[in-house]
Length: 281
Image 1 (tube, one colour):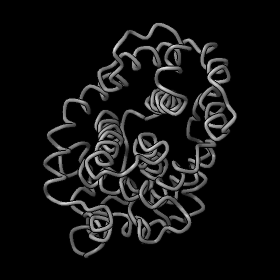
Image 2: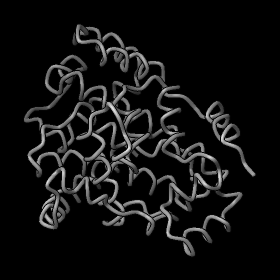
Image 3: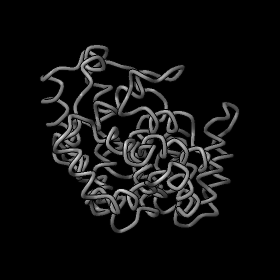
């Protein structure tokens, strides 16, 4: 039997995000941080600078003029968006080529992550909800725990598939029964180790079980929960637990989510998801 401690120790072997992202994470939590502070962190990192300018000029962010400098990008996009771009670009580089245990390649895992981020933001607009802070990043990193837990599931693949097909349990419940933990709990620990903002930590932990969260931003986690289910529904990043997921009806009720929301959001986001997926890749 694999222990929870074994799984959590796996976190220590994961690659970490660049120092610049950790510094930006601290700045985004500091209300007194200025555009100059953000620029001082970004400019010494050529890769981060290049990604910021490339993405700032993408159709997704909708700027009406070309962005040619870090300072201009920060001024036009704001500190929050700049952090989200930096975190996204950094995360794309630490995903392994294959996610064992989930039967999904890195390109599909990445597409799913991007889809959840884009869908969460679009859902907020469609449902007339003020977008919670760092919603895009929280959606992007919601499945962080899969990077550590996958190998253990690979070793127990036949038992996992048996549980999912023969028993009425969610994918997270199957993980927990087999490993003593699930990718949500592990994702929370990784997010803490990487010094990511609270909103990312909360979402990694509760996106499959919004009803059990306490003292966190309900709208943030609810939106990512819906976006995650919709991403699977639309076929973005199907994995071995695809059919063991469903929208929590209490979340749908809280947010006023219905079939019309699915149609509106789905039709509006396909091109954006493909564009963002290609850009970060």
